[in-house]
Image (cartoon, rainbow, N blue to C red; front, side):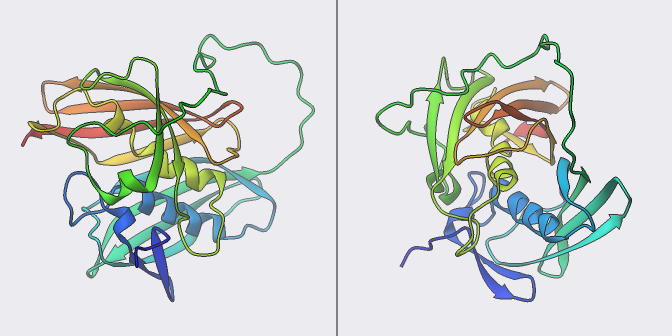
Length: 264
């Protein structure tokens, strides 16, 4: 029977990685989105002494994450009265392969004055009319993760153009019997910025992210997340994939991925 979640709990912070986590670079390794969301789930479970909202998440990819059993551990790294820093790590095979840190702030209900419209407010329609049929993934891209997300392309989404706007929705939850949070849904999609906006041909080049940083501008809601991404490459062998992320109502986050770039 095919798996119905990205991960299956084994107890004690251990999880079996299912076929839905398989990434496009290597059939033995996970896409960065699902483990990033699993780390965020652990961060969200580290209950503060006051109501809190995550404002930034940074994930470092220390090694490729194999399709294997993984262990997640978390702790409050820097407690505080108004802000605190929480850390989570993902271990497998006797070493830490990913690490995440998140700042969270005390939740409030502020009476704000009218805010001026920013020069970089979203230009993507946050309530699109979805195509009747699912948009196919680009030629050459394979892996269980891509099939575990329902995709909808928007605008001029040309292969190797270095830019793309795409909506995504998780077909399966992160773990059984649990609705993913808005932040978990954002993290699952945000790690695809370099893939959807690839500026180089996949068959000839690697453009793998070494980290993912997501700054929240609002609390995400709903199943659909829009990823509006741009990739820039430098001939010295690195690049940046920068993205804006939307729910159906508004801009909810800005993401960035530092890329290693090299020939295959």
